[in-house]
Length: 60
Image (cartoon, rainbow, N blue to C red):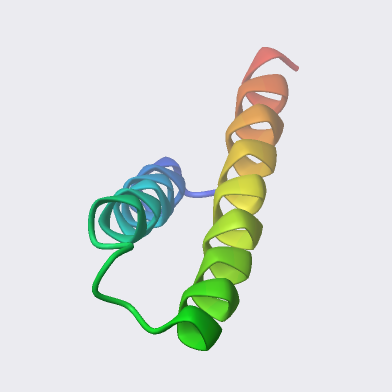
């Protein structure tokens, strides 16, 4: 089973990275901005999956 604290921490970190990228989009070079945006999308998607997986696992 997943450790709930780790899932919550990963979710907070991934959303924080996405927020930092959104707020500082003018200061990041375009090539790096695209690469970091793809990584942030991947991390946020994984955190949603882990949250859903941990919630479904807690019901059973």
